[in-house]
Length: 196
Image (cartoon, rainbow, N blue to C red; front, side):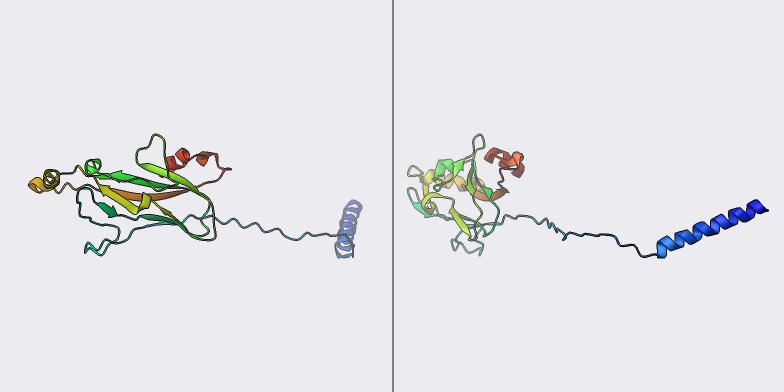
């Protein structure tokens, strides 16, 4: 029984000592830094492709029709605009010609466009971030020409048997972020691979 009293006394003494430590005033040195807040946003690339309406009656400047006259020059003014504050980018235009386009029509690319090696009809240029819109004409002098050797028979054949096989040129623009720190898009070819 004396042993029990000793154990109880020891437990009470320890409990009182613990209360004294917890309840006692102890001065500690404390230091705190200012918080550093990291916000991760994203860059953006915005482009448009526009062309003047030919007045062909459909009210849509993205689907124009032209009358072909041998040797005649036709105004065609597609323009790609990289919007202000877009990130550095690879800007592409894809020129898709119908199978018979080269039999009837010809054009040149506007200055500054570079043919992408190994990819027919795809041209590119490097665009640097700017706080203003940047516009790039696609076709030199905004003109396509009907070849002088096109004949009436060739034109009539386009409508033969209701096939309406008129020459077509489809222009599409693409932009891919250009960043030297991203190995996967260090070249125009690598950037174009992301488009496909």
